[in-house]
Image 1: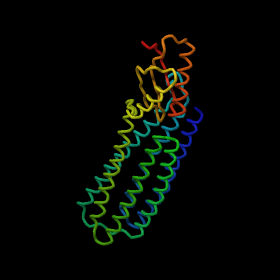
Image 2 (image 1 turned 90 degrees about the vertical axis):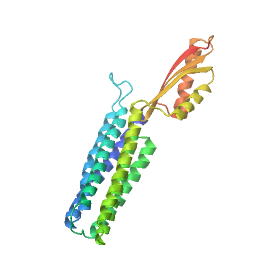
Image 3 (image 1 turned 135 degrees about the vertical axis):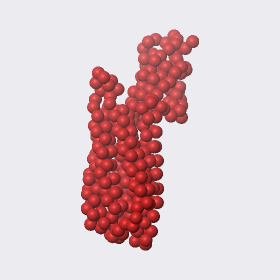
Image 4 (image 1 turned 30 degrees about the vertical axis):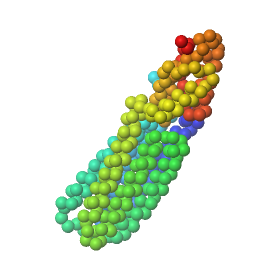
Length: 289
């Protein structure tokens, strides 16, 4: 269990990196947006301010999931990670909708002041910086198998694309093509909503105890090959945060002693932990008819 909590602590570092990056980049974008008269850069800066809330939700969720089991949560608090990812998806969806609404509104506005070209450079520099944060968090999330941090990484990627879209719009305005800004913003908004939907779908699937059938077949195969197991009457699995809980009913020789049945149960638990990194296995032994 120590390794599990240490991985969550590493995930918290990733969330804090996101928060720090959003604080610095949002301030930079807002200041430069005012200096260079760029509404696209200003909108991008305000977008980053809202992303701080999503990253805070992920950080709080990870902190809660690190709490040890208690009388009310005997399996621990790991599902707080999934709830944090779910909250992040809601915030991302709202940002995506806001981006599209603002883009459509700008299509019907009159002539706007042309922003300075320097603002496009600022947007691109910020996009590169945020892409670096995305790569860092994505690799860390994959290494520690953390769903909440992966949601934060996807949010980082969306923000990098938003900055690229802002740069495209600013460059288009230099050539008297303000509609490019709106078209790019609509595309970016749709991408953010699509990412939010993917995170929402995965989170709700986990929270409703959904489990991949192919993975369940792999677990069944491992148990069936355990010496002494003559059949599997029932097998269930569910995801608890980023860890798998398994309940299995196996059939053994009816003439076995209690000690022999217990040894088979221990063997199943050891194989599931070693081969599939299963957090908890509940084995029930029944005599073979």
